[in-house]
Length: 582
Image (cartoon, rainbow, N blue to C red; front, side):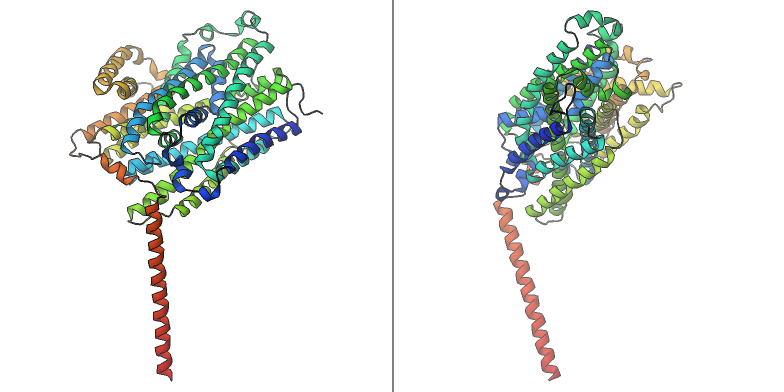
């Protein structure tokens, strides 16, 4: 068998492609010399990444294998408008981040994690909520990317799913462990170029091999009227609307995004996010059209699993060379997000578990210890994701579910950066209450009769106003947000009551926003809190500085002197004992 067969990759081809990809990323990572190791650089690259690298890194992180698979899944399930709803709203959420990002960087210019900032703003409980949700989200994200990689290798080569998962996990860990976040952003640049180039080649090729323009006439009978419509209500209610709410939550609460926000030069935040918006939208909408083409062609997903559709179409309809290009595209997309998840979790462990705990006790965190903790965290996270990867999730449902969970945090987090009256108890209680209402709503545990569904739908109406209001607030301020949010709630009410209860995912997402907003506002509006935002910058300073090194050196010298004095004292006691015995 040659390196490439007509429909898939041989074992030799897969090994060579993986060696080429991960060998190249490891070479790039090793260019960052160990002598330049620095705890702050390991987490945020010194807060000074330029435009090209930062825009590429943001784009690559937002474009992950799961998002490619999910966009194709959406195209297959909902037709032509599915990928548009998936890609367009995801792209716009990147754009909506940047005004909030500028505010966050203004009050915390040297921060490393959002949880660290919440600790400086509120205290331990808020920090733990944000750090815990990010660890959960990153482990799930890491797991789903490993699942995507394992499924890809199992479908395109003789290797098994678990073998593919192990190889992907080992490759990503190897180059990220070396230099942390710096390795992630450096390799992202090459990975995003590979992804964009591959999409430009792959999608038109699949269209051509499936039959070209004739496919739209010959396969039209395979689509329902809703799937043929660019304005499909099914696509909007099942995909678009839940994704708007979910992705806004991802944007605000996700440490992988925040890490890049803290890393890019402050004056480059706006162009970075605008460029990433365009790159993400074009790529994800484009690759999602593969699902639409498969729908027209009457292709059934292998094993009935929509997650298999993208690699299945590539393996069956592309020649060997293009299968190799496709393979690199998916490996690049999943690796770019997996390394971001590892870097995010290591930063949380370094900063929120070790760094802040030391500072809160009046002690100086040791940057060398922080680096060790960061690397151990990456190893443990990889092992956990490998274990969880044996459970096969539906990626689309997984993405929406995690994003909706983060929805409970959105308003309290944003309000904490703008409103001086938000208290720690308001933050904590609002999130917990929102989650308590979200979970039974999401899993259909709310009764369909009586007053309960009307209450839930009333909260969903408020949620519509909150989501649109927050989007407007970042750009135009409080007054515009209140006007648009109020209008949105009033206009949506007739369509929500008696109707939205059939869409648990969307309803639960909106309820999470509404409840957290109502409770947080109610508990804060009468508080006497008058927080000084200047405190945040002082409480989130860098860890690896000359002043810290000097302080640690003095501390070590004092410890050495104390040990020496203790040793001398013991020797003196021994001498006295000897004299007594003599």
